[in-house]
Picture 1 (cartoon, helix red, strand yellow):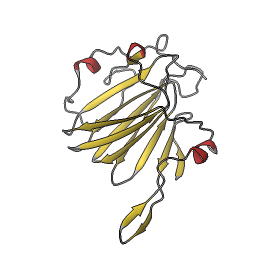
Picture 2 (cartoon, one colour):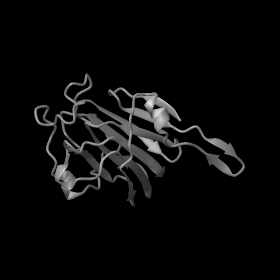
Picture 3 (cartoon, rainbow, N blue to C red):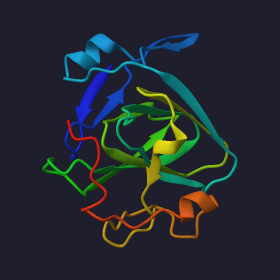
Length: 185
């Protein structure tokens, strides 16, 4: 595994190093020891799977409130997504900033999303299969989110058509630095 930094504090990209032969390839997609050498202590509590039928499906921007804040490792195993994270840690130098990256079955890149970040994605293809490893159990009473189209954040989504989005995700509030501060470490 290759670990690469992102412009946001503590968030990282994880690239696999495939060992290939005539059968295909084998690679480590997760290694606690490798992550620990980069300052990440990650305990998997749950693995979630999302399958999206259509291109231009948007899910997000989600996070869990204390004490159930979660680290995530997000991977795309079929199709492609534009994955977005927003730093909500007020003591961070990148507080209120966003970062987006394409994750796909072709580039085989994952993203480590630290506690205190909102997360969402937009499908770039039909038939997208995503896997999340998370460090906390999903707790519906502590679920929250931000509007995907918030003008302050001004996320540059690659598809400008109206996305396919749930009514719940349409109900999230705009980013407010005074109330969207979570999970400070």
